[in-house]
Length: 279
Image (spheres, rainbow, N blue to C red):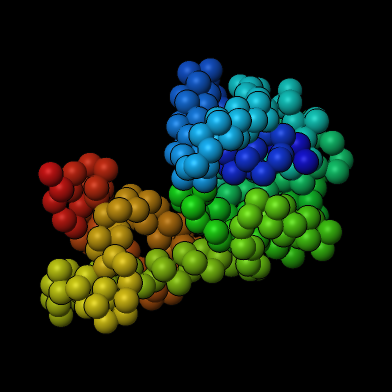
């Protein structure tokens, strides 16, 4: 299968021919460098007793990846397009509308969005039956899960092709309808926000909430630690989108403390401060 996408190390490492597309040559060069570093880390573990085989694995995988700054000029020869650009409906829709004009009739389009409605993106194209969600989890080489999102218009053939593709990557696909947040985020984000509301009401400190969920539920990270790790701006973006779709849902209500931190650019670990401070 020839794929035009942003999840290239995994696809290329499993025998797929990949065309990596981004806005500039500099971005592509940095991406390729990051891919090579990631592959070498994988090879070091996978081929610990045979470094030569590891080097061959890296070179073979890299040889399966081509790059371009013009998606429209290369999409005609692809079987699958996996989009992983900015979480903005207008930008995603414009990209797919343009690619739709140049892609082959059989080409399947998939979005890696974690928060936007797949149906809304698909409506920008004339191939709603060949459009679905394919949501990977970071870090992609390590995380086994892929959510395959089927809209009311997605054909069974398209759905099965994406399930097969996910399995070929060594992933474990799960199926979900086109509902806000799909499975993982639909359960995870409300849980995180309930922890924030518990803290905002003064019912418990964020430290005690984190400790309780780690020791009582066996979670590797508490909700505030996870929020800071993910990025408060990311969670706020998802929540704001859901609130816009369903403003009366109590699970989707904005958080005063999170809004204040984001406004102050205290986004979590990446900025050195969020709900916690980091050195």
